[in-house]
Length: 424
Image 1 (cartoon, rainbow, N blue to C red):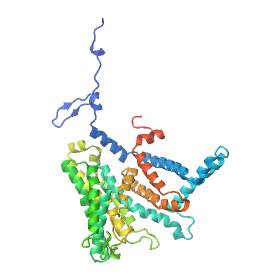
Image 2: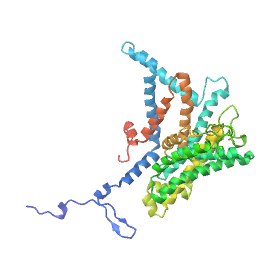
Image 3: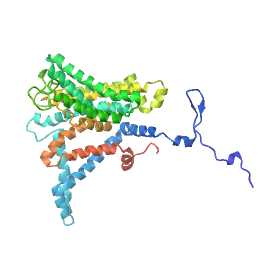
Image 4: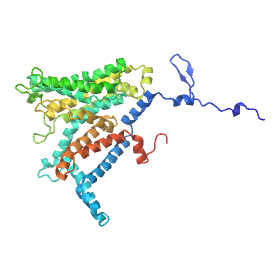
């Protein structure tokens, strides 16, 4: 009968020791590392979704377009008619399918980039100017939300921040009579500051009490909406004189963002504002100490705190800057795109669309700019596609929703395209 020796006993797997704050060392077993705190799991998942591989983002768009094509086929009357006698003449079905899909995406291109059927050069290039006009607020709001992603936060308060920023800019625009060189910059700055303070509420609560920013920002959306609605029903605040509707007076010429290519196009200086904001956010995140703190907190708040970073202050600062950027999207709407008067619907759903833009751009400034232009193309081309091909514009909304779905499931995209995983 053999006697058990040390070499026959099961060895306990250990990891390298770690030094605690008191200077002592702890030895972790393999079973300890398996027990990852639930909060850490969510943090890792959020970081993977918001800042993951750019290739996954591109492939998510490809998959969304593919499934969008299937929906176009199912809603096309000619395709359904061809399917009714498919086994007799299958060629007809394939022909109708090709005509439906190619016609849809060609019309999307003509409505978003270049309309070769236009009679003049101005008519031919007008689609791209419309795309850039739609892209400006999406990019500005996406930059703000993407910045909070990089800090490990989730800002769903885009709607409220846009409403407060746009309403504040409209108040300055209609209540003050100043020369344009002062009036327009003042309205922009006030709108950004008010939205920054509104976003800062969520950051402050997160820093001081640990309140979850998702719940806080969702609730602040409703509070912001009703505050703006109240202001729009009071003539002493924003309601237009002599009107009973919840709407402000039209913006004066001295507070309107100037056109970039002349009055025949709707593209205004709001797009330049979005491009400048993109470079500014890139500099903050990649060239400033503040951006380093944001990225450190976003990667691992506990490690950042141990390294001496004030995590609460980082949260508050991130929400301040994020609110200002999202507020600029509201300013863009009021002073550029819809200048006939501010309403409680000035956000036009951009506050939520910007979440998708930030996700698709992987929370990188230039990626967000590209994603904003893509979604601007969807908006601009979707209306043209519906008018010329009779395809419901809701198909575009379905494609956007599918993009979010695939972005939220990177392992699914990697499995479909057989991409290598980190474990592999």
